[in-house]
Length: 318
Length: 164
Image 1 (tube, rainbow over the protein chains, first blue to last red):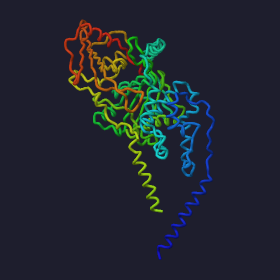
Image 2 (image 1 turned 60 degrees about the vertical axis):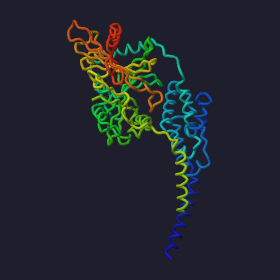
Image 3 (image 1 turned 90 degrees about the vertical axis):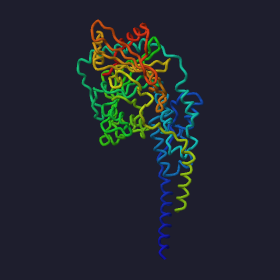
Image 4 (image 1 turned 180 degrees about the horizontal axis):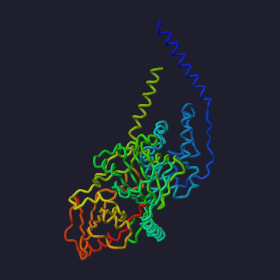
C-alpha cells in the first residue's frame, strides 16, 4: 500500500520534469552567424583542420548539431560560442597585423597540444572535432616551416644599443615604477634572483630568462614544486633575439618583465597566482584595468595541473 | 527512471573509455633533470647572478653568462674598465630541446660545457680560463693558447642584458 503514493509522486515528478523540459525549449537566446568579414588566409589543409576542430566556437560559421539545439545544452553551447568568438574568431582574425595573427595561432596550437582545446566537453559529443597528431603536425609545419638561418639586422642592433645606453645611464637614478592595475608592485630585485631556466622562443624571436626568488630556489632544491610554496615569485624577462654576424642570437632590446606571485588566498580567483607585467625600459605597467589578468590565466590554464607553471626549473641553484 | 539514468551513465562512461586515451595532457611538473650540472666544478655558477644569454642555432645550443657579485656589479655598471680583480665569469652552454609545454620554444637539455674566466688578483696577471665538458663535466687539459685567448676575449666583451 505504501508503494502506490511513492509511485504516484514519482510519476508527477517525471511529468513535471518533462513539462519543464518542454517549456525551456521555448526560451531561446538569440544566436546568429554574423557575416565573415576577414577570414584567416591559410593553405587549404590548415583551414580544413581549423574548420573541423575550431570553427564551431571560433568563427562566424558555427554549425550546430541537432542535440546542440536542445535546451539546456543550447544555453551552454551559445555561451561557449560567444566566449570562443570573443577570444579568437577565425572569421575576423585577418584584420589583425600578421605578427599578431601568428602569435594567436601559436597559442591556439599550444592549447590544442596541451589538451585544453577543443574543450573536452565539446569533443566528447563531437568526436570528429578531435585534433589528431597528423592535424597537429599540419599546424606546426604551417607555423614553423623550415627556414634559412636568420641574418643580422642593423636596425635591431641599433635599437638595442641605444636602449642599452639609456639603461646604463638611467640605472644611477632611481626609477619610480607604477604598480600593475591589480595592485602588484614592481620587484626591482628580480635581476639578482637565481636563474630558474632560459627559453629560446623561435615563435616570436625572443630570448627569456626566468628568475626565481629565494622561496622558489628552495622549493626547487627540495623538489616541492607542485604546488609551489606560498611566497614563490617568478620573473620572466624577455629580449628580442639579435642576430650576430656569426649567426648566433643574443639578448637584444629588453621587451618586458612578467611576474607570477604565489598567494593562494589573495589570488584565489586567479588560481592562487597574482600576475603582473611591465613593458619597455621605462617599465610601463601592462593592462587597462585589473581584468588584464584574464589573459594571463587563459594562457596558463592548460598547465593548471602543474600549478599553472610552464617552466621546468633547472636544479642546483642552492 | 533509475535504470535509464544507469544506461545513460554507462553510455557516457563507455564513450569516455573509448575516447579517453586520446586526450592530451601536459608533461607533469618536474625539475629539468638533464640540464643539471654534474661533475667537479670549482664554483657553482647556477648560484650566481645572470649577466646575459645567447643561442647558437647552428649548434643547437643555448648559453647563459653568470658572474660572481664582483663581476656582476662591474658589468651592469657599463664601465669600460677591465673587470676588477677576483671577478669570476662562467658561461654554461646547454644543448637545446623542444619545450614539451610550448611548441615554439626551446629549453636547456644536457650541459655541453662550462667555461670559467677568473680575473687575476694582481695587475700584472692574466685571466685564467678553464673549460669543463663531458658527462660528468671534467676539465679539458692542454688547450691551445690561441683558443684560450679568443674565448677569454669573447667572454669578457659580453655586455649585460638590459634588466631595468
